[in-house]
Image 1 (cartoon, rainbow, N blue to C red):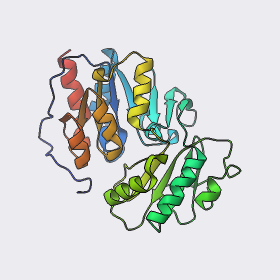
Image 2: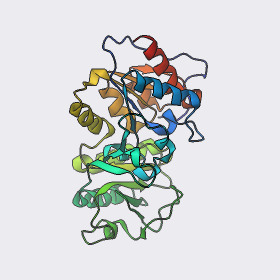
Image 3: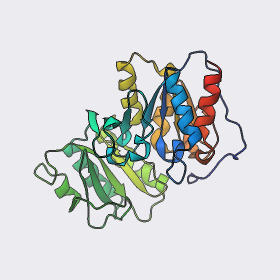
Length: 294
């Protein structure tokens, strides 16, 4: 498979499938989707999100990011202010602002499952190194690269970090990160899914060979489905946007879905429509057209 290369020009207009059911919720990924490459939210996108909320359509940010990295959109929270973080591992109320987020729902990765995943992937892909994401803590192995521009709370082998009496034992584990220095990213994802099986859910959102491992059945799609069920919203009433393999289930589940112009080939195959790239405000373009039809 190709890496995350652009597949459409900046001038191509989005493909918009006919929608017989009015939308009630917009679910959008952040990096590579709503955010431009410089991690900003364009004025056009801010205006489109606000217009959607004003029209009575809820907006959910659905991301692989942990809650502590949500400052990029905290200033653009409207209405309920909820976000799905960690690929579905947590639902977070953003109203408190950076450093004061409230966890509304947590779908943790059991430590036994995490340890099994680490063991099986070490056997299948020697050289894999790990980090552990918790609700508030971040821990990593000594050889795990500096991918996240933050100082880990602890350095130790994954087996120690995930032990019942290990660092952060009082906090739930949201996901583990697995990095391989030389494997092809898509090949690493396929290998890990075969090795780990049903013990955990494995996906990726990075252009490097970095995998994100969550609890069984935990994904953007499954947590979004739970949130929608609580609001009486059906999947047909959801419009979703994404660009990487961790978005595939969500795009497949939603009644209308759009792959970004810069999306991974698997995302393009999963979505019901396609828009322009994130740097060309692809999410805003679709929302504007959608609101014109209401």
